[in-house]
Image (cartoon, rainbow, N blue to C red; front, side, top):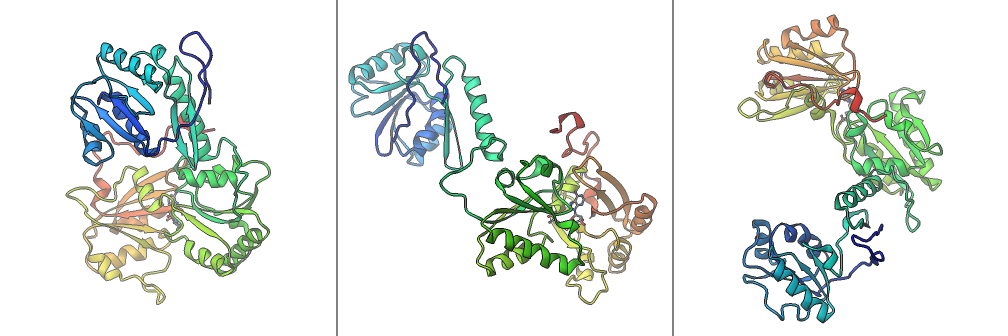
Length: 424
Ligand code: SAH
């Protein structure tokens, strides 16, 4: 808490009021009340609002039973039984009279129109993960809010290091890292990453974030584990188990969302079988975000009211395939193909053979949301050629359907900020 006085004099004394069940008088139902009421409600205060009028959201809080509203002006005696008061009418005379009553009854009171006449000030507050941050600068509410934002954001994403001393449970967090742009991980994922002792990362996902980790974090590159596919998975599971058993906090960082073709549940099951605590943090899947980054919505009103995400890992005629390609070919909506670059020709042929028009628009988006993003458009019958001609390579998402042409002029690929705005 930072505290400097708005008027000459000593600084305010910071305190946390426990208002549950205690009467708080709120005078005036306008913008100030609307801003302050949610925190009073959250604190469980017994709120009495006195005001002839109220903004729609304040009215809704009264209707929801979160506060009691008396539709009238201030009357002497309103402070009776109050522990705390928020005085915020648009009439300075009323505010002065009410705060005089508060002073007389020794009720701490905030005044929206005159900080110098108030006996209490409201700090800029924020909460994250069990921590309440409250900042007072006195004269400069915008600065208070900016300091609050910096602290809360820093705690949320782990850039502000504030180790927990009470509990830091060992175990594994399987974190969806998003499609690649380091800004597209969740706040929780970022914080867990910053707190980890060991990070086991995939080839896909926000690899730039690994460079930002503290020097003591051990980073294991799952892509470099020197075995075949099945063995590599076993080796990854073994490494996760070994580090968690040693009491370390482990993050398994994956591309996109852990449960979308990510073997997230296989790893979670393997850990749970060994009695290791595991949490799974969702991520932004490339299936939706990569087309979006290239200006392609997976649904668009009047164009596609469904989208289907399909793995192209196995050839359509592979007997291990669980995919009903003839049924997919009959769908009118968007098809999103992952891991499909190598087999794109065979997939396109199968879709055409089962009824999808050869002229259906298709787009291939390679390395979406990263500096290397490329988009190449084609049609189902020219897809294979386009991939060869342009030298397209994985990772890429292939979008099939009329949504490919949905963007109007002037819509650029939006998820990738210009180079100058990217975090260094
Ligand atoms: N769990 C991931 C998908 C893993 S399968 C998710 O939810 O996104 C791997 C496939 O995802 C790749 O073959 C490719 O089709 C797609 N992919 C992942 N990241 C990508 C990116 N940045 N650009 C294009 N395709 C991507």
